[in-house]
Length: 66
Image 1 (cartoon, rainbow, N blue to C red):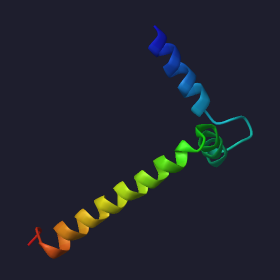
Image 2 (cartoon, helix red, strand yellow; image 1 turned 45 degrees about the vertical axis):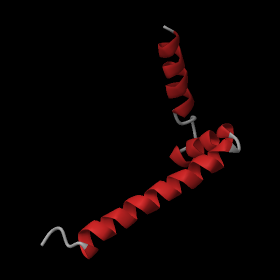
Image 3 (cartoon, rainbow, N blue to C red; image 1 turned 120 degrees about the vertical axis):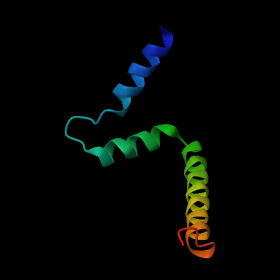
């Protein structure tokens, strides 16, 4: 029961505010996350860099599609 209440609260918090757009809700979500959001953004950028590096390596250096 408690989990469903938290899920509903999360959905309502993520919903765009009347008159605001997606960008406004993302900015609000980032501000509510506090300083830990910067840590999350850093590690997300690292993960994306690894994914891109793996794609380049597998597709171009090892030429797996040949």
